[in-house]
Length: 217
Image (tube, rainbow, N blue to C red; front, side):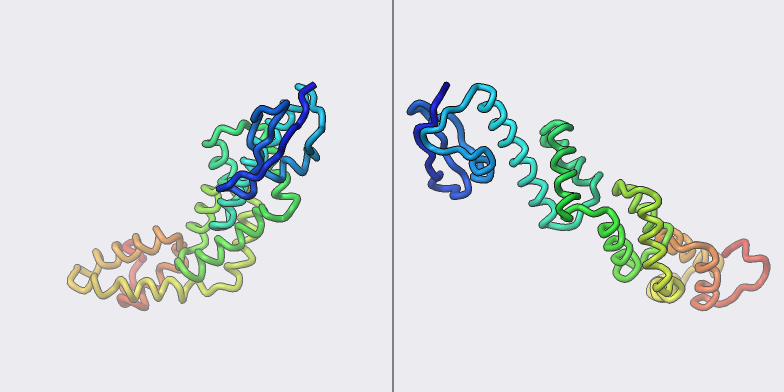
């Protein structure tokens, strides 16, 4: 069986090691992989173990990329899985890495959903409906999204948020016919995810109550 004859730190990448078998360079490994397989000089390794080490290096690389994505921002499990799949690590490797990240607390769809819901309500001024759609697009399960939105939007004054948006938009609608202005303003608020029960009174407050049956909002 091949024998590990030398393990040296790479000059430009101190977290990686060059491993030599029988005096010849064999592979470069992350130092976590070296530690996991307890590689040391003088150690004999079988061809099967060489294959396991190679697979371990792939898994470590996948984990490292996952951590880089998570350091940049929170991700849902589905989002992170899509990004890792583009790097072609294979489903088995990716699913194992994702499971480890969940177990270690780095990946948490409930926490992700709560953060996204807060951002939608407090910073983007989106209504609940749009926030729900965005969470589903990110791959968050319906029950997890609902729980996060229930928590956030019960404490958020959606009418006040809609009114703030409407007041900002109103200045650009002054020269339009009243009915047109109302439709434009209603369309903007609907795209933001506010429901009719919130939109109608807000438009009445900002543009004036038209009365009637409300067919023009």
